[in-house]
Structures are given as structure tokens and as C-alpha cells.
Length: 389
Figure 1: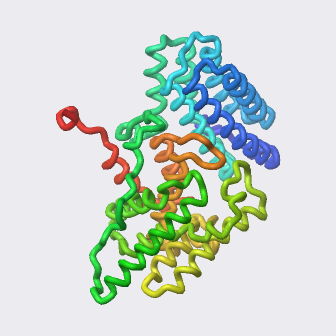
Figure 2: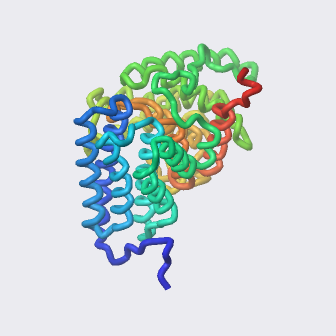
């Protein structure tokens, strides 16, 4: 008996599916850029035309690959954007965020369908119906429907986090600490050496941050983020070792060509291999300094993944140390919520949280994701009116 909640892909040519995924990734990057431009300038005709070309291409590719549910999904989003183009609907930040989260959901479901050869329909159909209603709704009702989409796709974080953030609002960024935190020293005899090392590592991290224009204050923010998250683990790890790992985890990047680091397009296989070498360089450098064996291991493993698809050793689950699991999430969070060489705009905290949670048990350790979730909710939870006054 057919299952109405999923769409079977077993009879679709695998090469067609691969081609579709390639077009999907390319199209989503273009759509995100155009939507951000439209938020700033809703009358920007160039962005509107570019958006519709990309939507038509993606919708057509889905249809050609016999992925009719995804084609219909894009069609409903396109209908709402048609109302924007005709100026019957004002493009707002809520609409932008709802569309972006819907596109993120399409990518997540598509990645899952490649693995299972089934496309789960429940979530995309619910979102699709919201966009169907948006097309003929009043402007106020459109905002309500957009908020419902955000709530549905954002899950628990849509309740706790600010849905919309000003790209220039610094209160949603982790503050850079003025000094390295001074955790308790278990061995007083090493206290001075440890302090000197950490100050030295901090100075190095500032120089590493300077190699990329998008990394300003990056190490300080990551350090604060990781130390905060560490407190939410069931068994927190040594804060000094974690601090050293955070400050030096990208030391090896300083030995890579600036042209590669700042490249705003896809890296070639040779360039990817060069970038991956930074783990080995950082690990070998700190391994030669006494007192930091745990930090060295964190640096070596911070690109490993629980599903075994990471590097350099393709470790899985418990083979990966806790500090590396923290650092992996922090690195990704920073990359999503800040500008990069290949993306000149920031993404929202809500999308960052959704992205990280959608890869729990694959790219990220599930228990560490739970710690991340609680930390984020506690830090950004809206205060009751009585506290805000």
C-alpha cells in the first residue's frame, strides 16, 4: 500500500538526482543573495528578475528530474514572490526569513532523500500550504502566516530566540573577552607556565585572524562561545585545554595561500586538500609544547564527524574528543552568522540553530548539540516584561 507521507525515488536515475542536488546548492546560494538584497531594497528590479530566473531554473530542474513535490513546493513560493513583484505585497523581513527557512528545509529534505531514496512530504506540504494561503491573504495575514512558517520550521528556537536580527546589532554576537579566562589551576607549580602559554597563544590567534578580512575578533568570540558551551556539558572538560585548542585550531591556515583562504568561489580539489592540511600543521605545532596534549587532540579532531565523514582520520562518535565536538559546533555557528569570502551577508541565529540541529548525529555530536541548544536558549531568551522594565 503506497505511503502518502513520502515520495518514492527508487525508479529515478541516480545521476539525475546528483545533477539536481548540484543545481539545488547553486540555486539556493543565488536565492539567498537576492532575498537579502530585496530586504534592503524591495524595489530592486535586478534582484527580483534574478530571483525569478533562479526559481524557474530550480523548479524546472525538479520537474525534469521527476521530483514533482519539490517542483510544486517551489511553485508556491514563486507565487508569493510574484505578488511582491507585482507590488501587491510588500516584501518584509518576516517574509524573507520564512522563505529562507523554507529553502533550508528543502535542502535538508533533499539531502535526506539522497540517502534514503524517499522524500518525506509532511513538513514540506505544511509549509507549502502556508505559502498557498499567503498569495491571497491581506498584508497583515501574510505576516501572521510567515510567522507560522518560521515557528514551524524553527521549532523550539522560534519560541526562544529573536526571529529577526539587525545585521548591525552587536548584542547578538558573543563579546570578545578582554583577557583569556583564568580557570582554576589544578597544579600550582605549572600556573605561571600555563598563563604564559595562553597569553602567547592569544597573541598568535590575533595574527591568524588578521589573514582573513572576515575573521576580525573571531578567536575571541569562539573562545567565549566554547567556554560558555562547556558549562552546559554533563561533564565539562578542562577549560585551559579547551582555551588553547580554540586559540590555535586554525593556526595551520596561516601557512595557506591568502588567495585560497579569501576565494569567493568553490575550491578546486587541490585547494581543498591544501586547506585540510591546516589540521595537521596545527596539531604538530602544539604537540611540541609540553602541557597541551588534550588541546592538541582537539585541534587534530575538530573537523571529524560522528558519521565518519570528517577528516583527517574519519573518526566516529566516541572516538572524537569532547573538545573537538564543541569546537566543531562553534566554528560552524560563527561561519553561518558572520560574513564569509563566498557570502557577503550574515544569516540569522534561528537559521544557524536550525542548521546545526539538522545535522545532529551526522556532522555534530547529538549530546553536544543539546548543550548548544540550552546555552543558546538561556543566552538569548526573551526576558519577561517585568524584567525588561
